[in-house]
Amino acid sequence: MTIDSQNLLESILQSLDRVSYIRPEEIPGIDLYMDQVTTFMDSHLSASRRYEDDKILTKTMINNYAKNRLLPPPEKKKYSREHMLLLIFIYYFKSLLSINDIQSLLSPLTERYFHTERPLSLEQVYSEVFSLEKSQIEAMKEDLRQKYSASENTFSEAPEEEQEFLRLFSFICMLSFDVYLKKQVIEKLIDQLPGQDRDKHSEKKHKEKEKEKDAE
Image (cartoon, rainbow, N blue to C red; front, side, top):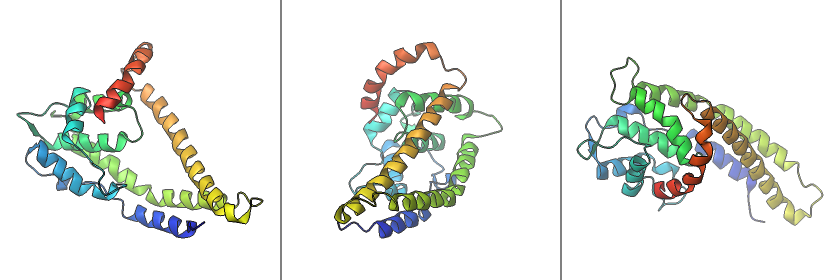
């Protein structure tokens, strides 16, 4: 095996230090046309790409988000700062949650804080939430170190030439199980949001795959 697991771990930990988010003050103070929206998102979230040619956001995606009621429609083909904030939330949620769950999560946010005169703005909600996320980086790094250490103690009886791969596989499995459990918790919390109709769950579920295809 040529996998250098220790260096890989250090590279991952260092990448967490470079994690950033789009600050509200970075969003232009004027409404943007769709091309300007996609250009802005591509430039500010490029570090999150897995591959160089991955698309952060496309016109089709934006249109389908509006179609599936994840995003309020633009005003005169222009998108406001609040549209941009919602698009950023969608970007992060879509890798983990279903379209229906994102809709359930964002609908109350949109109803209460999108273009309203409430004392608390959508921008303040966004800033508060992301400040909490940033504070979790060090805890996440320590959790990664512990899982990596545990994986290094697995498969001691396996042939030596297979141990490195199997230990990396163990590390990936532990991380995946962690994500799986947290996803289960998130879904249960979404089901407790006000306005969720449990009786319609089955009806929504059979439509979900088609909606997800449209929103990709």
